[in-house]
Each structure stands twice: as C-alpha cells, then as structure tokens.
Length: 201
Image 1: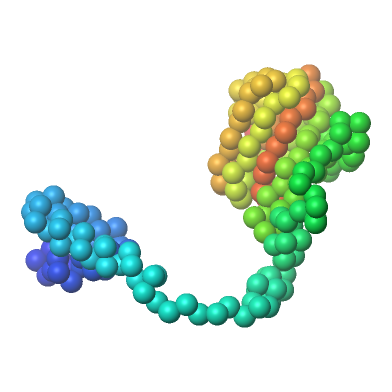
Image 2: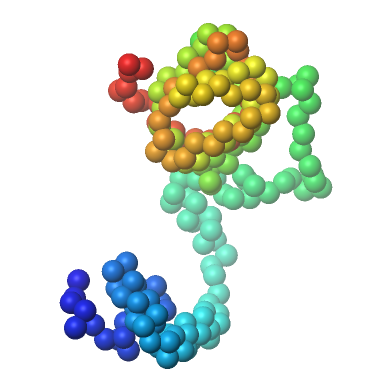
C-alpha cells in the first residue's frame, strides 16, 4: 500500500475503471473525485473507454466441442442434460399422488427430489419430518430456502408455521427440529456439510 503523497490520480483512475485496485486505493480515488469534481469527468472518460473494450475486440470463433470438453474436465453433466427440456416438452409436473417419498439419513424424515441441478449444485425437495425429529447440525455451502407447508419447524428457538419463509445464508449452521411434525419445500446446496463435529449443547 503506497502513501497518499505517492499516489497519482492519472495513474490510478484507469485502474479504477478496470476494477483492478484494492479497496484502499479505490477509496482514495473516490475521495479525490469528491474533493475535486473536475476529476469526475476524467474518471468518467476512463470508464466510458473501458465500457467499449468488449465491443472493440475481434470476435473469436468458439470450438464446437469446447463446452463438452469443459464439462468433461469438471466431471459435470452437460448443461443441456440438466437444464434443457426434451424436445416438445414445455412443462414438467409431478402429481401429488405420484410423489416418490424416500427415507433420508435421519429416522422419521422422508423427501422427494423435485429438481437437481449439478451445474449450480442446487436441489429442490419436498421434506416431511415426523413428530419429535431433530435434524443434525449442518453447515450451508450456499443459500437455503424453506417454505413451510404443514406443521411447525423450530430453528434457533424460533417456531415457523405453514406459510412462513426461511432463508439461511452460506456458512450458517443450525439443527432444525419439530415437535408436531411438518412438511416443507426446500431449495438448498447439494454440498451442504453434515459432517460437523458439533453437539447441541
């Protein structure tokens, strides 16, 4: 990090426009613009120039198999296999009577996987938990969204009922439970960590 007296607006402004400065340098550039409004016009000219760079670069053809090679290297299914509908299929539905409830790792918990996306590493499930179920402590790798459908769910001493929406953020940890039993819709990361060496104490 350089001292303020060694900083030069003319040198840092182009890097600011390219988003190549660290936070301290960005704040310095912004402070200079506030102190001297004339510098705002100079900075805006750099930002305008940066904005047209993608359009001035020549178009490069992409190898036809580039996407397949990339997904093969990452060990993922091609996007089409995950996201695109089969020909002539405009909608997909599962009737309530056809839900394939499967037991989960916790006794008293069943779930139906409605949609699983290996690319974004997310899945959407319906979950049913019997009365008295306590889910183990787990840590979220991504955002978890729950929409309550029936019963009650207890998270961090808060009781959530049918119609309630709950969002947990990445790295959050909790161990939900239910006294009465419940059913909810959940969208969560496939890679959530259930191997935590935590206790409920």
